[in-house]
Length: 422
Image (cartoon, rainbow, N blue to C red; front, side, top):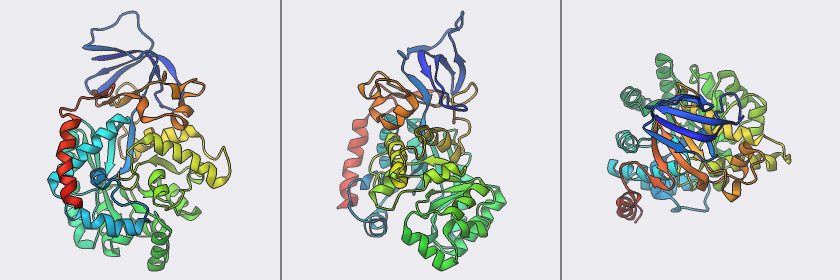
């Protein structure tokens, strides 16, 4: 058992209220949250939090982790050029060993910024499963097929293999996007989802071009088209949604879908500003993701929360466009639920011990007038003092406790990057 005491605690179970007390973990689970009792059990370890904040960890609800090899490789170009000329050709060179190496590089960044789970869409799932489980971090695969109906069998094979692969690994049905696959694939995935009673996820309406070309092909936007073929009978959601209108948001609200926004990537690629204020007002489920480290270029949920909040103010010329605390909820509780991680969405006894310690004594977090808002508007990844996943401390005061050193990971990636991008 591990005891965290002398802590401020934000459970996010129903809100962002903060109490003072302690939290205990027993194995992978939280066993107690509350005031210090008169008698204490024997603990394996006791950690004085020194008045800092214990809160749920961040969950990255959309990413392509191994794209770290293309960070800063192609800049100052729009999405379509970036994707088809600077990403796809180089991704064709990747080996399973490369993906393993670059996943571990991204895991360093995830843990240092307080993330314990990634909703990852990429190649060579065995390699990613190995990298994440060896480092102790959660991985939820999002199916990444494209093409035709012939590719649906491959999606099903991966789904059956990885859905119960490891306590830290799960799998959700998905495909890359409407514009990189044809209608036979879309209908095939819909049939698979209906047979398995499973949600489906995909990139959707990320750019105006993508959105309008789907309307030209199908007579409907991606969200409306997918609803019409039964793709979302059992839920799911989409990544980006920049060009959603009120009818698209109604599809999401009607089907209980998750709107996963990636503010930094959408800003960097000039894709646009997603309608988060409207989603919040209309009751659409909100989550946050970073997208990949080649289109962001950081894997940092503090940046996503900040841009998610302030870009809405600019979009609507309204300083009160969306509460900052809603961005915090999207990055933690919302993202966990979007990924199906309902056992580690909030802090509560019986939940998985996925939590972080945030330094409230740092200059950028003082004075502590409104802590939830400060996390979003002035917080920084450097404020994360500890990251715990499934009851194991993986990052503590700048040190990684994942069984491999950052230096070894960096050495492993350098030669690979030269080979792949030469």
